Image (cartoon, rainbow, N blue to C red):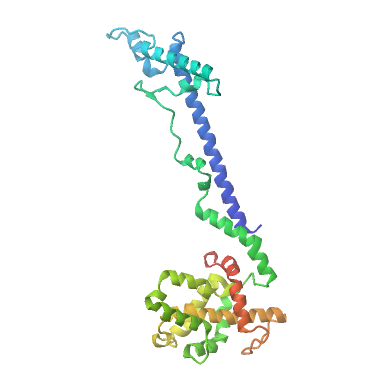
Length: 332
């Protein structure tokens, strides 16, 4: 199990343990309140019970009379109306249960609903904690982001990673060497900017501007839809970010890529939508040529006869998922 999958699973287990702990605490509070209510009811129905078991709030006059208070001595018996009301409720409940012969709760449960507060008024059963309401909604016990990350890691470990191993996708990329590698293909990328070499990605971008217009092509939804299409395959978002920095230094800071040459795109859009995927194609072709040849000493400037750019384009499209998982910019 990988570290990411292990971390996601640990987070799920921690949340489940927290939920179980909250449930145990809730059950303990319910038991304590039930015991408290039963003591109050026994005190009202059985006046012979010692006064120490009575709620202090209901019999304060006893202490005051012992201390020589001047108020009139009151009857220590429970209030007759309340006592009669409790007895009638118990009798009514017993009669109903005998007549129906159904599996109802015992008479004690009907009495348990009555609780006296400090003012002697009756209250209902306590409300549940707001946090424990999640227990009644199993689908919300985990946050949406946690669910997404756990499922993403699980799918990647089960399908994407084995597929990458089968297709010889690199698990480790020396991103610090990208600048040197891109400098070797600078002349090819410059020819694309000058228009002497055709580019499929440039043609797609120009067609999009022609169909949607400038505002439509720069709509955030359209831009997000183009991300996967222009992603440099298994180099992932990390590789895309590094290539953007390298190409910006190479062509923007040197004024090779100007606004006139980039139109109707902006220079930044031109780099992201044209030069980054074109550079990714050539890097993938070089990687796969080395793998197939079993050699790491390809001569500079030599055509990649083993892997063509069209074959590299297919590899780049198929390895986007692998790159997004293995070489995500957020992990570096």
